[in-house]
Image (cartoon, rainbow, N blue to C red; front, top):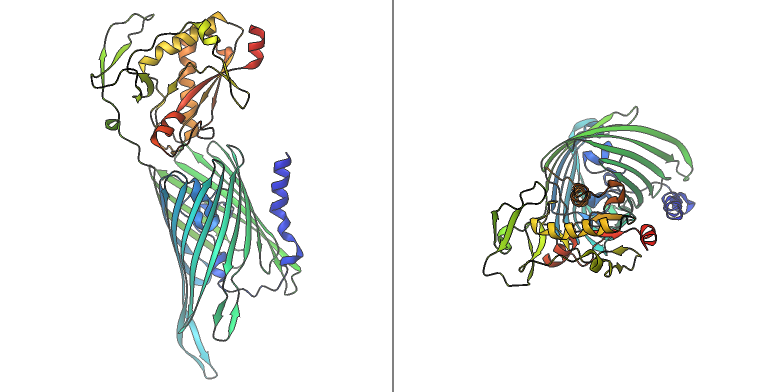
Length: 497
């Protein structure tokens, strides 16, 4: 609770009079949001920042993006003004993301006048080119930087400026994230003889995710204006149809920095996701001024998964083995495999030489207390191949020994914890690392239930990639993190003793 109060205080502290000033900034097109998805959620996206437009909302989000993202947006804005936006993000290594963003706003057919009246028309255009980088610091924190070149033109006059955005993103828990983005720190824009600063802005946001639901709230403090609060939500149905809604509560100020009124707008949007492609639409009204429409097309590509041909060769043959009424496959290693060499094969960890089944008494002697206080059974090495939740037949021996142990100590209860590496998963079977980690735990759960262990003695928990036991920077480390751990609940252990 203390953490939540601290974050909420930060969100609203920007209303201090230090920022009160006349709004005499330039390049105001930088205040327009990016992407139809965020627009449908009321421009509340700083704490999420997980798509091709993360560079605008919070460049620190690039550190958590896996694979690559591409997005293109068309905006029909007010007074016949149109804007085109393009964003691209690419994962580099396991904890770094690099991005490019381009925005071009154009308006034509302004009337050219002088003392004699109208004589023709002219146009205006604003262009932004940005380069961004985001980097994870540890597993729950990321920092980002967005560097941008800005060019403004009106008729035959032009001006240029440079700016940077700096952001941070904190994964407080598996479901809660907090983001902070300081935008438009840079040079002034000089038109002819007058110079004006960029629209300096501080943006803070919270994101809460639960399954297919995202709930966001952002606070913005822009130079010359009072604090604006935006909120929005998104719900993904059947991993295909996204429904979005938001509210923009904006306070306006007079030339002395005092509040002169408040405007509230309701936004709406939807998205259609088909494989790696996504089409989004947003409707954003501006009261009596008019309504605006945004359409975005996004493409997502997940990281490359090593093929099974990179693993040692396996020969599998079916033999009749009596295990209740089951027919179990016999797994053998080809002759070139080294005896006693531990290697990840199929969807589990086995050994070149078949391992002996350890009696339950020997397992009990090897309880291991972790630094976090958990008591695990280290004798069981249950690992999985990328994107899979099925166990290899060789692990039946270990699981049978676990079932024997639980039968000998009926007071003991266990928690089966599933884990993944840090590579994002989005397949027809598993749409997230969280789903995959839970499925891995459920696989072991159901095996033990089928062996006669009462379900009330078993708990399951999925942690996705939030609790690695080693670095994910190497394939070996990722292999160790794709695992299931068997944790003994300490309260039941005291009863057993």
